[in-house]
View (tube, rainbow, N blue to C red):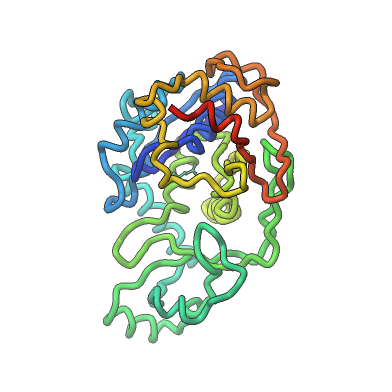
Length: 322
Ligand code: GLU
């Protein structure tokens, strides 16, 4: 089967060097395998997404020296490559889950949930595990509440082991005791990231997902959705997050780390690519290099830091200062 990978940014801000790391690694993985690379705009959260950011992201990816075979600007066999135009597919998937009683209406408000669970087992991407309050409401109670309030819909997370081997770090990522039913459609009608990303990756024939480690705890949820909808899941890989020399995660809010700022400040894309490839261990020295010159060198990433992050030394950081 041909390898198909993707970069799927959310156009709610500018791409920063952490995004560049994920995009580069995913592109290298696909190009090394001689496969197809896809760009997909994840603008499902319309309130936060802006067309101007989406346009700038494509400019930034070109600047990095990446190319793609299918995407929002060039189309392709699985168009459209923009989530806001794919909602019919999400609804169809949800219909199937409803028919099989794998989702249920949830009437809990955000503040109610916050009050119940100040639980320490909170999940980074999704908040604390849902305590299951609405899972077993009797049908009559559901009808009564639905007449008063539009519910969200939650997926019944099976009590199963969704461990997986990470293709990039080689680690087995296991999530035992992990039980939160998660939202697939919000009360305001917005489909969740988890549902949209899984439906799109399956529909677009993605064989290899490579993304930032900030999404590690989403993977078991997506694996559960693949199983529930009867699709074969892709291989998953997560690139470590970047931290500064003090171990503080590089923040999206640090505008100087946006690719557009580096570009405007005269930092060459090759300098950034060289720094990232060095941090990943694909080259021995942080020297300027083009993305396509790394296709052969790309391989597993070893992480020195116990947190699973890669620290950027001040010396490397200097290279990235305009
Ligand atoms: N759209 C997600 C983000 O920007 C990434 C989705 C994914 O790679 O699965 O964080």
